[in-house]
Amino acid sequence: MMNESIKVIDTGYLYPGFAASFLMLEDEDAVFIETNTNSAVPVLLKVLADSGRKAENVKYIIVTHVHLDHAGGTSALIDECRNAMVLAHPRALPHLINPEKLIKGAMAVYGADKFERLYGRISPIDPARIRAMDDGEELVFGSRSLRFMHTLGHSKHHFCVYDSGENCIFTGDSFGLCYPVLQKGSRPFIYPSTTPSDFDPDEYLKSVKRITGSGASRAYLTHFGPVDDIPGKADMLNECLFKMKTIMDGALSTGYSGEELDDFCNRKVKNFFIHELASRGISFTGAISHFMGMDIYLNAMGISLAASRKAGLK
Image 1 (spheres, rainbow, N blue to C red):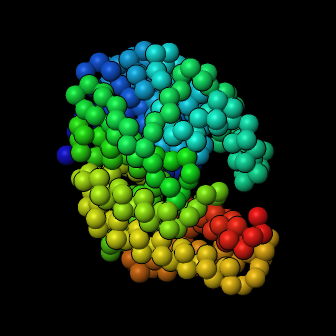
Image 2: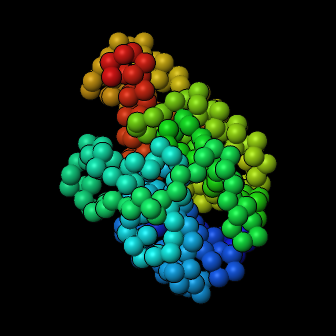
């Protein structure tokens, strides 16, 4: 049974069961972990109110990294939570203080119109309300200690948060994606997020090992929710990472660049998902195909970019 001190909040981003935020409760105080987008802020505040707390009870707002499905709502949420401090990776601070580069990068991926629909206005955050958390740094919150662990591979500005109170760890995208809708086959399916712009399979493998070594009995994934059997999930995730690395190495060997390279990676990543789902008895059709569309595109683009960099093209 999940402890009531941690609440999983479905933000409603894109689809149900796609992106979560988390609310941690200690006495009268509260912590949000992940903010999703501006559209999620009313949802987060309602869950907070339903728990019997007010916005002024929020002490910390933690973002595992500044990709906008994790941190896009931070400026809007902290405007509501006047006593809160944002906790982030040291490399993430410049993007929270001045989100211009982050916005331009996301617009390049999604286009201006889709960016506006998904994320809306993202404002700068007062530097006085942001605190960088170093690797291994611990923070006391009520009866529990929160330990921050820098985890590369998905993003260079990513950390995970180990919670001593529930012996659990909040992993952002460093322990992959495990959507409930894809767990209805013959066996579970967890796979890495290889999105632009920092995918590094070797560093990702190190991060998975570090998460497993934390001793946590449960991981809370932003995509999506709690998973148990961390060693077993890690084995599956590592297998998928090796396959993503194989796609990247194959992309390098083609000599392709630009759209040809993107198309090659997209075909390979899509075939990977079709095969993995079929092996579990899940057909890649209809709603499943639609649900997976964004991940396939973004994962392929991340692999293509990583291959381009290795080839010296970018």
